[in-house]
Image (cartoon, rainbow, N blue to C red; front, side, top):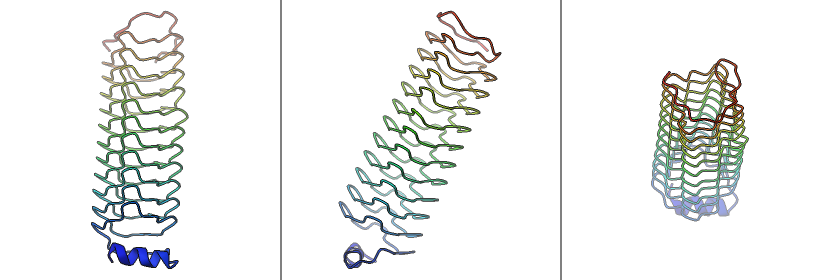
Length: 253
């Protein structure tokens, strides 16, 4: 099926397009609200600036597709494949992408408020300056992802794998990071005030200049982590003791 046929059928009222081959089609700026493309192939398609609000994209293949500045609010995309896709500046508010593949995708400055990304593969993805306020990322894989200056207030990152991730200057105020893997991650200058890092793996992580006021590090593994110029005022340390003095620290182990 080509783009012209799809648009004609959509204009005539058809919404269900299951298992169709639309690889490489040009649907730039197309209005396809509530379309159902279950199990379809849109590998390499151009959907930049397209309107796909409420679309059903479960098990759709969109590898290397361009969805830059697309409106994807409230889409259903369970098991969708968006690896290497361009989602820069896209709107994904309230979208459900559980168990999706977004490895190596570029999602720079996108709006992902209240998105569901549970068990999703985001390894190597670029989420710099992305808004993930109140997002659910339970057990998501974010190894080596770029999350610099990302906003996470109200988000759930329980049991996430963030090993090697770049979270420099990220906003993680009061975020739940229980049992998270932050091995070798960079959180330099990040705001972790009142964040919960209980039983987290913080081995070799960089917390230099980070704000950890009143953070909970109970049971966390901080072997090799650095805290130079970090503010740990009122933080609960791994041994359960409250840190009371605002001084520079640099744990060797």
